[in-house]
Length: 416
Image (cartoon, rainbow, N blue to C red; front, side, top):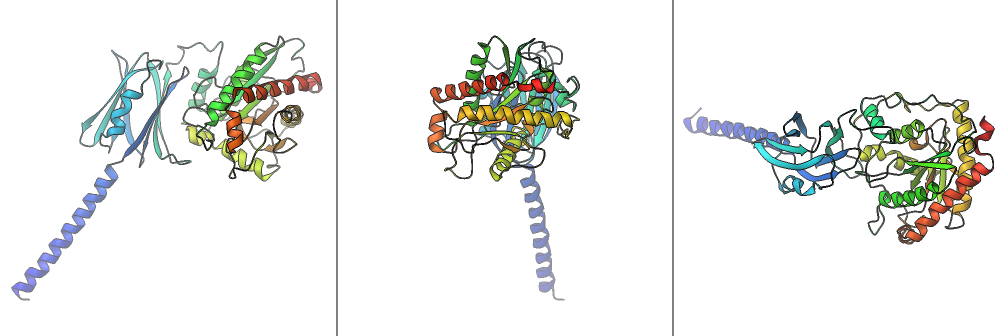
């Protein structure tokens, strides 16, 4: 081999090695530089949630400091950008848990997030995979330290603590048919469930109306009406803009020994032409229509959109197909029929009978439960209607009339 050929071969080898080295560096650099695209903060009396949305899954470390109380999260493979820098401006003075937040580039590969706290907290930090148009998320849930909040009036926080430990059923009463004495020897207990909340907006109309806001407004109106009834008491699964897992909503109803459970929604469909009000009950044998199956799938997706840290617990991982469950579904259908009849007087009905599907939020084995689709928020005309206080009040009055009619006809008295 001549010197020229040798040098030429050597140059090609070096160029090849250099190219391979640059490629490996660029791959490492790409993998190490996740892009933070959004930060959202959801303060609530029960817990505050912070989500960091990014192009790839984030690696993190967390620890707590005292004097003052702080939670520190180091996020690896991230560089400080305008989104991260804007976190401090998202902290509200009314936030019960976060006093202020700071973000800085701790070293070349790590961003440090420091939240100064108003009280000792119990953090739950976890990651979520992309779902429903939302990219990878790092979720930081800040709960008050266990035992610092009384559960006498509202067991929600205690149930969330049990849920995060994987056992939301720990303190729930045994499943059994109602004794039929509600409304006679004790007030009727009604649980209202405004769908979605917090990170989960629910369906969104053409003009950006969010389902979670509309259904909370309707539930509050219905709550006020029920509070005027001498023989009824009322509770809400949520009374603010907060995400509550589906299982915890059901558990709260059972913990408070609810006689009826009403989940309130304003859903969307693939066609904007879909319109009208609907009422649904649980099915243990598959959906009774394609629309019911579609709506159940979208509602059950709420946990993935809102984000839950635990997926396995004993409660509701299987549905009880026993006599109690069967009787409950029969009562749910009777209850739903009464509400649907009243809804027909204020809005077009999407279907003139109670539909059924496997809605997770209706799975309390011993509480007659219905899901009311007040109207289609995806329909422009009904979106406008849903935003009006007048229509919201009419929906609330119709549901209350259905409740009264159900119990006036005996309700659960046949289940003594």
